[in-house]
Length: 204
Image (cartoon, rainbow, N blue to C red):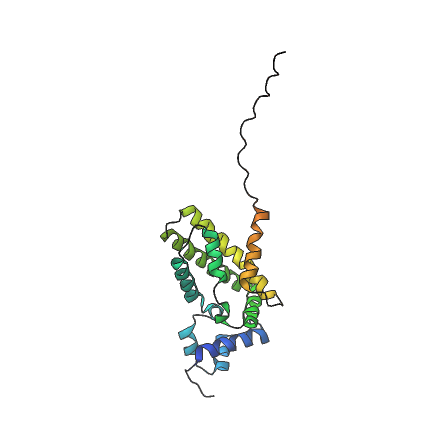
């Protein structure tokens, strides 16, 4: 079969998804992916260290783009909201159609090894946010909480967006999920002062 380099990365990504869905992730090999994409196995390994990484090929560039966006944000008075809005404002369909992202998510969720790698990538993203907030002068503890909690909030919103059958945009769903925090962590009440002793009755 003819082999060519132009567009090989995208063909390999597409071929991998097709094979993973046709015969299962575990049963698919790098050689099969290369054959379907009409490239050599050597070319496959020049782009990807293993078949798992083909599902996370854009992770490093994505993390770098999101961190840069966070560093450019002018207002950091609310670090948690800033992290969430940075994630929700990204055009995720640059990475593929919503249907493709949905299929990828389901594939990852069905495989413990892929799920573990996905969690590692998410942790790396949160770490990037934590460092970026620190560079902008946010208190270290606040930066850590904002980065990790914001990533978790967005992860829930992103999953709901993928599973949704309507056209509700990701930012709206993210705002709805964020509002749930008020139910989980109610606003702190001001500390109560000491009770005053009852006033003495006026002398008769």
